[in-house]
Image (cartoon, rainbow, N blue to C red):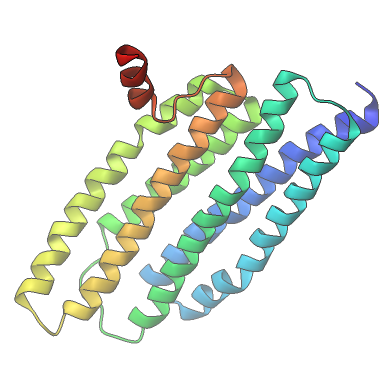
Length: 226
């Protein structure tokens, strides 16, 4: 492969990793803005969303440029398609981080409802999943991507616990209902992030092994009844 073309392919991977790093930082900062009651930090998260959007646009341009340089092989096509699918997923995760930052700005002006214990655990798990998924992407490691998918069950368990705890607040204390509802939405944003990281890992498996595992149970049922 000519050096210029090789640089383009490596550049695509690096752009995805840079965008992923921005998103990981946004999640961490958004949650810290809530836990530490730091509305200035929340405002920084919102301001930083433009950088994530800029990365998405640049990656789209790189994908188009790679198609223009040559007719891609099957493997190269999977790499470009994966990049094109990962960027909107990462952008949506960043949007959820911004929503957490907005909730933090609202909640920081009110008395804290309860000690934050499970929410930071949930956020830490999501951040770790995202980091591990980006490592799997960089190494084209389908096995590592599958391992990350399994971790989403812990995020779901934490969400269920937070959900029921906050419902109790909403049912028993009308003055706490508004704050409990906002915290419940924070938990929901984190739960959706975990789902999106799972989507990222499914795309990595496709890139590395040409195997579609998204809706795999549905595919198995369809094939069995065909």
